[in-house]
Length: 353
Ligand SMILES: *Cc1c(COP(=O)(O)O)cnc(C)c1O
Image 1: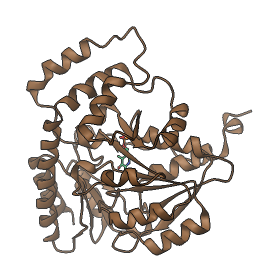
Image 2 (image 1 turned 90 degrees about the vertical axis):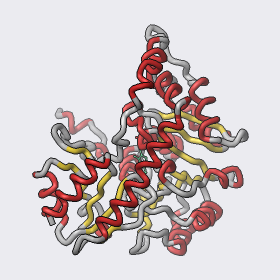
Image 3 (image 1 turned 120 degrees about the horizontal axis):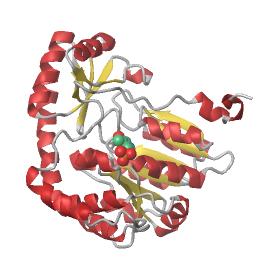
């Protein structure tokens, strides 16, 4: 018998998440923060790591890190907090906990691809409700879909990836009220956005808020968190594997969060770069750029494959999302880099159109 005879058909139907080799490239494809931690923080970080006991299992509740996170993020005291090895793991934990036979995971389209991938992997039925042509929430069709499909969970990324826009949070709140089950507000890009759902969280027993440190400058640590009611989080916590946040990540993230002003300052710089690059892109003939509240820009060009190949030949890696969804035809997504990287990208794009 071959391996494929034993593997679940849903797994066989998937293709492995592809990460292109970026060595030698200016890497603007994965929404990473282009800035490293400032050199003056290195000794403190080294000291924090040195005091992590690698011979012991990590604190399964990551108490020191969780308390620091609560304080820095301003999580309401009545909310629980659960940590994940990246927010991808949290999506998986939620899906595993809710995957009753026949249960549905709903999101909008285009949205973050992992919602659909994890639904398929965990045996949830996936339903995607299209956004409007300007990528805003189609509130009426979403609310109609909630009544029709009765999803166990709805994932909404605010701001949305790969489109970059922030949905109207009043509309999001009406969706939460109309949802029969749980709504997960994914704020991976909170640091770059003008508004957050956090102040509204405690009003809703069926909403939870998910964030990550990845886009804020700590992608290498793999740390995401979920805030929300203890009735939900208590159950999710049973699905979470006991030591999912390793000791080095706990120590490094705690240290970095104690210096979070540095990260927030970097995020502010990235926002000014974003607004400047959006204006420059908008002036290129044939290029249209979509409004962004994140650390990346989605833009449409006359020929996405040609522009992507031209950028690549000039050693600039962006994400070609033009075939990810019909509404993204002609679109590329670029993460903000340093000032020099953004300038190099702009020049290379001009030469590649
Ligand atoms: C990047 C991203 C994530 C995943 O973040 P990790 O914490 O690195 O796993 C989740 N949601 C959205 C919308 C993202 O863009």
